[in-house]
Amino acid sequence: GKRFIETTLKHWADENIRVYYEHGIPSSAPRDPRIEYVDLYTLQGFEAFADVLQGSDPLFAGIMLTPDGKQAYNFRYDANRFYRKAFCLHHASTTGEVPDRIAWLDADSYAHADVPANFLNVVLPENTYIAHLQREWLYTESGFVVINPHHEEHAQFIKLYMDTYFNGAFKLLGEWHDCYVLDFCIKLLNVTRVNLTVDEKSNHPFNESVIGRYYDHLKGPERKEAGKSHAHELKQTA
Image (cartoon, rainbow, N blue to C red; front, side):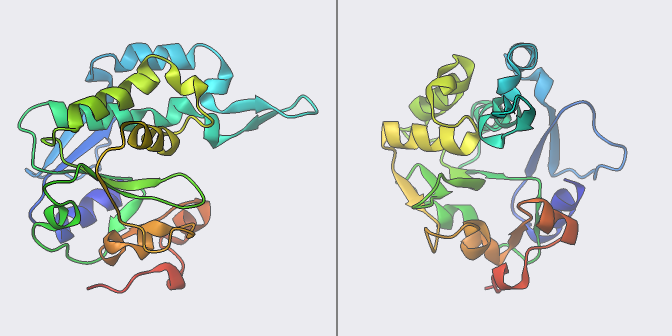
């Protein structure tokens, strides 16, 4: 997260950063007028929902039993880990002075080149609600998502995105992580959208897309340990 913040401050000059955190801000966290830190536990309904998930069925944390009776982790059902994105996007798009565009970036990404001015407005045209990394064979890669919070489709979409978790409807879906829930909402409401994916059969569309010119997404333990993606996955800067 620290690397994400520092590199974003360096390479994305015309945007502010809102960092959502829980259980305190480390003393080493960067400080800058462009950064706003928001405690997730101050968001309406967050703590109560967290208590329900953490204090009930272990399945909500992705803990499942194998055929031989042993416990195993499956991220596809870890609603406790992934519902946070819905709360963050809801808060960002309904609180304070709401910008023209809101972009979500996973904290395990970092900027490596200067992002051009008005990038988000270019990525997401005025008459379109959401830009995302859709995959033909799998769910959306939600490490980078852009929404227009002033679009006529926003209120219904963000309510459904929140309610799918908040009202327990996620339990009826095939998987419970935010990528799957995001796709469910996009398809159910048929919102106007831009697919930023270059190759819909790719397993790592983030780095191959337009955002990959400026950011590297360290998806999975291998890339995190190396501190960068594999050489063939890195997109040349514009």
